[in-house]
Every structure is written in C-alpha cells, then in structure tokens.
Amino acid sequence: MSPEQKKPAKSVSIMCFHDELCQVFNALMTAQSLLRAGSKVTIFFGSRGINAVHQKKVDELVCLPDQPEEEREAVLKKMDEMDLPDARLMLETLHFEGATLLACPLNLSVFGMSESDLVLGVKAADPATYYKDVMMAADMNLSF
Image (cartoon, rainbow, N blue to C red; front, side, top):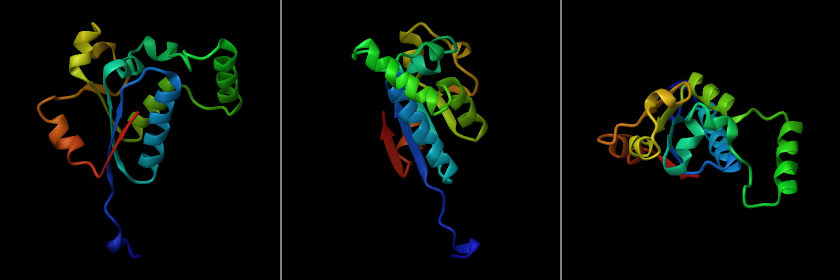
C-alpha cells in the first residue's frame, strides 16, 4: 500500500471506571498499544477511575483488593520482575505521546477534587461535547 493509500488512523475512546491497579494498568497498556499503532486515543476517567488520575492517589492504587494478600503481592512482584512502569509514568508517557486524558467533571466534584489535583496532562472533560465529539465519533469504544 502506497503512502497515499494509507488507511486513516482509528479514533479510540477508552473509559476507565476503576481504581483497582490491574484494571487501570490494562486500560493504560491498551491505550498505549493503540496509540503506538497509530490510533487517536482519548481516555476518560470516571467514577472510581478518577482516583487513578489524582496526584496523590495514583501512587496508592491497590492490586486485587478482594484477593488474599499473598496473591496481591505475587502479582505486584511479577509486575516488578517484568519491569513494568507504574501508573503515573504510564499516564505521563501517554500524555507526551499524544493521548488525550480526560477526567469526569461530575466525579471531580463528587469526590471533592479539582483540576489542580490531577496528574500531568489530565484535564476535565467538557460534558457538553465529550460524548458527541469523542465517544460517538470514535471508531472503537472500550471500557475498563
């Protein structure tokens, strides 16, 4: 396929509604893979997912909180052995590589947060345009 015939980039909307580390990690890794494959990626953090983009809470995310401690520790140990980045680094990398990172403005209010509490690159979504301009226009919508 010649450069002139190159397929247009897919637009992907990813919604992250969890603050459990494995769910957040899966959302971020999926976003990174799609972004690096040439997709335009927007990640929306709502409900408890808002904690994943809070400056202080992002470093305190818990892996498998409903499982015994030894299972949680085994997963974290395996992630360390694989030299996987932490959630904050992944968010910053996504930001610098061109992903759009959005926080639900309603959940910011509900959880007593402001935009200044968010990690680098995360902005409050505009509820008047988010669903129409991002989610409905996306070629793919994923939810974690």
